[in-house]
Image 1 (spheres, helix red, strand yellow):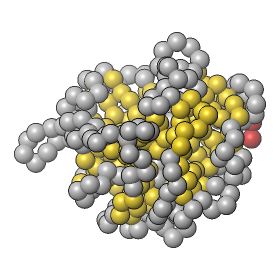
Image 2: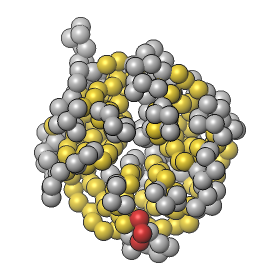
Image 3: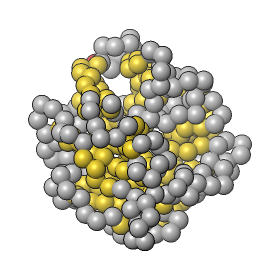
Amino acid sequence: MSMATLLSAALVGGSPGPGVVKTEFIFEKAPFAQCHASTIVETSGALVAAWFGGTREGQSDVGIWTSRRDGATWSAPVEAANGSQADGSRYPCWNPVLFQPRQDALLLFYKVGPSPDRWWGVLKTSEDGGRTWSSARRLPEGMLGPIKNKPVQLADGTLLCPSSSEHDGWRVHFERTVDLGKSWERTGPLNDGRRIGAIQPALLNLEDGSLLALSRSRQGAIAESRSPDGGKTWGPMTLTALPNPNSGLDAVTLADRRHLLVYNHSTSGRTPLNVAVSSDGMTWRAAVTLEDQPGEYSYPAVIQARDGTVHLT
């Protein structure tokens, strides 16, 4: 089952629990045994969620599934993409990322391939808010698109996609497209994959106009790097004081300029699942504990809707 949580940004305070408005399952029955790596987006009239699902992560039957919430409930999951190739072979799909650019079609990025060190990037678009999708378009060689977390759209319309690779150590890089996926430029990697092994960055827009990237790492702490020029160049990657159990995270800059981080506040396990808030991207305070029971609560995705509410999957 996949779960969605609704928070009130105004209520995200210093004690556990007060900001949670609603928690619900996106589905309770589905035609796949397992699912992982959800993503969520707001369109003009609905919320759309996606994830990969199939027999088991890495199996060839794993596809990208979506659900829409344009009323009181989520629609039944439907498969929006799979890894079928022209030669009849089929590879697993991985890590979908939904993004709604300003005044353009909805984007669905995902990866296809036998493993994370050998996958490639793919893009589909939707002109009707995620009801139907275009044919799949493979990204240019060496481009993966956003690897887990959503892009940011800069003032000039450029999409800056947080990305990473795993074939030569865990290394973070960024990919830019000025035309919504038709042409691409790549910046980085930011790290050598040895001193700090990091992947799956999330982007925040700081008050001074710079960008902050927060990444999953193998070093027991969240890694960070900053860019003063819209992601063209980046400062050195360092480790923060925030713990990380080698698990995915996500973050969003809110309309009031605060920053919200969803992560596992642990060095050893993927529970608890926590929300922290910062006014400057440097110091963080605990806001909400979303889950603290035994088990695994990981790979969050977070957005803020136009009405100010915060949605997580």
